[in-house]
Each structure stands twice: as C-alpha cells, then as structure tokens.
Amino acid sequence: MAQDKMYLTNDDMPRQWYNVAADIKQWLTPPLDPANAKPMDPSKLAAIFPENLIEQEMSVERWIDIPEEVLEALVVYRPSPLVRARRLEKFLGTPARIFYKNESVSPAGSHKPNTAIPQAYYNKVAGVRRLTTETGAGQWGSALAYATNHFGLECTVYMVRKSFEQKPFRKSMMNMFGAEVIPSPSDKTKAGRDILTRMPDTPGSLGIAISEAVEDAIAHDDARYSLGSVLNHVLLHQTVTGLEVKKQMALGGVKPDVLIGCCGGGSNFAGLVFPFVPDRLEGKKIRMVAVEPSACPTMTKGVFAYDFGDTGKLTPLLKMYTLGHDFIPPGIHAGGLRYHGMAPLVSILIDQGLVEPVNRHQLACFEAAIMFAKTEGIIPAPESSHAIRVAIDEALRAKEEGQAKDITFLLSGHGHLDLTAYDDYFAGKLHDYEYPEEAIATSMKGLPKV
Image (cartoon, rainbow, N blue to C red; front, side):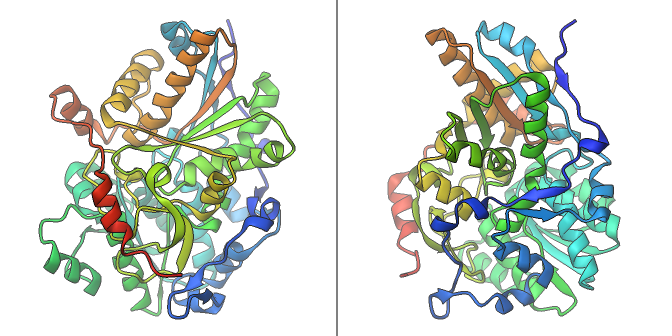
C-alpha cells in the first residue's frame, strides 16, 4: 500500500523559528507613529505588547530559538502530518500530486495555537495577568483561550458580531477554556460605542474588534493585547509549519512546485511559504499562491500603502495591502478572512512579485470544500476551502496541460464548528458577493496621508 502520510517524530520538531525579515531587509518598511508619521519608537508599543515580543517584532535575525516551555506545549499536536490527497487526485483525474499540511489536528482545530502558545508564554514571563484579543471566525479566540489557560492567564475576546451569531459553538469552546467572549462592536469600549452610534446594525469587522481589544489592553496596566495574524512576530511563530513541510517533502520526494494558502491577515499562508522564500530568492521555480475571498479582495483590489490596522485608529501605521481601515466586508462565512489589511511581510512579497494573490467566490469554495470532504474525509473550515479551491483549479490546469506537478496547500483548520455554514450552502442561502469598486474607493479615501 502506498504511503500517503508523511510523519515526523518529536525529535524532528523545529527548535528555531525562521525570520523572513533577515532575507528581505532591503524591502522592509518600518511601522509609523500616527502622531508624526515617523518610524515608531518601540517603547510606545509597551502598553500593548511585552518587551520580549516587541524585540521579535523588530528583529532581523534569521533564526530565533523556541523556548523549551513553548516546545513542550507545541508537542501536544506537533509535528502535524503532510498528507497526499490521493482520492481527490483520482476524482479529478489529474496527473498532478496534491498534498495538504493538516493543521486541523491542534486542540483548537486550526493553525492558530502555533502563535497563541508562544504569545501566552512570553506574556506570562513578562508578568502580564490578562490578554485581550479579537477574533473573526473564532479560531484565533479559541487558540488564545487554550494557550492562556495553559499558562494561567485570563483572556478577553472581542468576537466579530456576525461570527458571534453564526458560530455559537466557537464561543462555547472559548468559554470552556475560561475566556470571556464579547460580541463586537460592544458597549464595553469607547471604540465600540462610537461604531454602534453610527452603525447600530453593523455586522462588525476585525478592524472594529481590534480597536476594542487594543483599547481594553491600554486601559489596564496588568493587561496586554495579543494578535492572531498580520504582525511580524505572529508570522514568525507560524513558520514551524513550513519548516516541518520542508523536512516532510524531503522524506517523501515531494517538490514545492506550487504552495497555496488562504489569506485573511496572512498568518497560515506565511507559515507555509516563508521557509521557502530563500529557495525562491536563489532562483528555484516555486509558485506561492495566496487566496482571498472575492468579497474582501485586500491583495487583489487594495493598494500597497500605510494604513491603520484597526478601524478606531489605535494601532501604528503599517505599510500593507489594504482596502482602507473603514472597510467593513459583508458577512460571508469565512469570517477569518474578513480583514481590510494584509500582513506587511506578505505584502512586501506580493509587491516584489514573489507571491501571486488571487481571489475566489464563496460558492465555488464551498463546492471545493464538499468535494474535499467526500474524497478525503475531512470537513474543512470555510477559510481553508479557499486554498482547496485553488489547489483543485491548479490540478485541473495540470490535467489540461498534461503536467505532473506537485501541489501543496495548507489545511488551516477543520469545519466541525462551521456546519451551519454548510447547512446554509445546501439550503441555497449563500450567495457570491463582488465588493463594489465604488465602495472600495470610498473606503480608500480614509487612508492616512503619508
């Protein structure tokens, strides 16, 4: 019988994170202080993040050691398997080989604990008592709740209201790990109250939820803020995924011809592809494809510019692909991909032509997710369905061209708590949404003048 799963042992766990900033230093753009549009003094971030994470955020060291306490927590579910989707290949009749890195095996059911665990650890070491955060689909909130419980911290999660209503069992999971979950926008913060005054029926957005979580952290000396995507140190922690994939590819004779990940803020995509960036810079032919929803086309219709990371303008200015911090996307079921900006490091790679951004509609992604579930036996998260859709598209293209290439995508999470989304799909309640150009243009008018 053919070996379809490539496993690593605990001894194969990466002992260091890979920092892509070391290899693209010439393109880096500093975060700016919105008060004067000058490079941000790292000390000003101390009200939001502990010093040890600020150091990682600013680092250009290529390798950063993973603390033993973090490794001991990660080994509960890592290394995760790299799996060949042989039954999907057969169904498609493609000569391509399709592989997926299965990050759904974590306690939270997604890739998110890869950074939640080290963030909780570094905050614990720094003497922080409580972490605040936002969450869209609830996967990040679930991961941070799990991690803070592990290290004995309290956790407050501002969950995008639309997802709060769509995904009640994510709230249950967060509560199980001891977190307080608040639908956003809320009346708990000034940012939330201001939004509710202007838009009482808003479905909310990650930008709004970030504003609330940051405001909460700043208002309490014993609290700090934790982000599940976008920032450099978050993407750094996620590279355990790609580092494992490189070892597994070597074991299984797999080529990194095409690497695919879904993109909201960029964390799972970066975790997969960043360790391959040095190979690409050396001239190896590796395609890195980042997939986003057509309803929130940050990379494909946004601009590469300095912008706030949140709607309330509480964050530093980051140079990234953005639709404007005032952008509020429609309530599609891929809640984790409904963010106006893209990670600065991913944005740089797009700007330099190293990463290919594409977008896909909701219905086509659900179709792909069901095809994957029927052939491979895993119900994927709606976010992951975007990567699956493009992996299938690439496999069908290989079929047309008669090319035997290797396609690898990151299965960022399972969809066991997203079954209402699938119910809506089967009931014909879901629709494709192309965000109007005029609405994007209106949002862009609010970009800061830098």
